[in-house]
Amino acid sequence: MGSNWDWQVFLQDPGGKFPTYWQWMLSAWGWTVSVALLALIVALVLGSLIGIIRTLPDSPWLVRFGNAWVELFRNIPLLVQIFLWYHVIPALVPVMKGVPSFVLVVLALGFFTSARIAEQVRSGIQALPKGQRYAGMAVGFTTPQYYRYVILPMAYRIIIPPLTSETMNIFKNSSVAFAVSVTELTMFAMQAQEETSRGIEVYLAVTGLYVISAFAINRIMAFIEKKTRVPGFIVSASGGGGH
Amino acid sequence: MMNLDLSFYNWDVISNFVVKGFYFSIMLTIVATIGGVLFGTVLALMRLSGKKWLDAPAAIYVNGMRSIPLVMVILWFFLLVPASFYAAFGSVGSNYRSEISAVITFIAFEAAYFSEIMRAGIQSIPRGQVYAGQAVGMTYGQNMRLVVLPQAFRNMLPVLLTQTIILFQDTSLVYAIGAYDMLKGFETAGKNFGRPIEAYLLAAVVYFIMCYALSWLVKRLHKKIAIIR
View: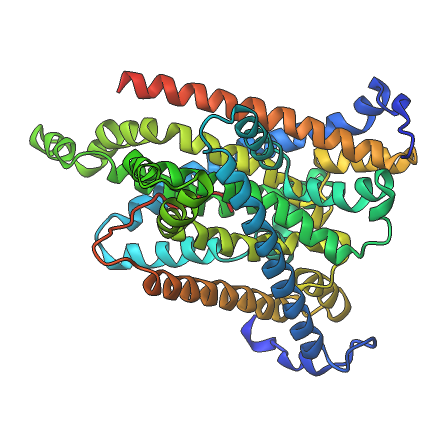
């Protein structure tokens, strides 16, 4: 197979917005990175909120709401959730009608991932000894204060390893955006394969970009973990599953 | 607020469009779980063999699969599996190309994830168990088959089942190659009756109930196993 590879396919003109396939591919990579990073922000904000309210003392209704949130977004496949955001929500909620599919995919991926991050934040908080919480109370902190100054700084350090794999998951999961015509890498791969019949070259390049992205995130998160390490505090947490 | 047409939800629609896809989703989940656990166990044993020529290729395979999106893996296999392979299945092969390709893809892809679970399971067995097996004169194969793997498998059962639930959700991604799974069934029904919104809503409800019930069962099993140990 190697003998009839034709990498010049990337110099051909796809006959649209882009003069060549490789320029189209780089733009698609940009969309993949944008979807993933924006969804990560949504997921971190929502996931932290939900994770925290699931650990609040004496608030059974907030805990129940948090649990329901996690179960809802964890038990429906991502592709189905994307279809719900794309087809169902604009029909039922008029305000969402003009929203571009890029935004809908970011929200879908962000909400989907928020359930997993909420679970990690909760387990990170609960992994801390109870004494930390009591110490915060003992020095007269209010609940928001001891979360802000005592619990969360340690909890986030504990969950950096599972957050790393979740961030890599977000990049991989952004590929599902192909289903609602966001021109990210996977959509590019499918279209370029069809147009050029050079599937192997196209898929190899796209797969390479995914692997580079995953590796870059891994290094960035390792750097953050090293920079935020507290001397003498040994962090251990189980890795995240799924994909 | 748009009006939902509840008459869409009737048994004729379900039995004509969804059931066929439902069977395929379940079949794909079961076959990929069994195949993935078997292949994954082999990969785990290769990685734990202590021999570089076995460890290295298994590590490359597992880490490679885990760094690529499943959708891309699905596309890769659909592109690469040769037509002669499908021809071996006769008329089934020509009519169900996407479905056959999906089964192979999911076994190959999930094996990477199952192998990591099995590796952790095997490593969770105390060394004393292995020594005990060696002491009574067992070969490597006997030791693995009769002493280590049954315990590893049992320790990891809740994790393996949780992965199976994730696998079941992931089967919806065969959408990329047009295989007829449960989601496709709902979508086709929605298109045929001009009721896509009702169809996607029902799909979400059905997936939710199935996955929620399964994860509830896994949680119960986890508690049961934890007490015995």
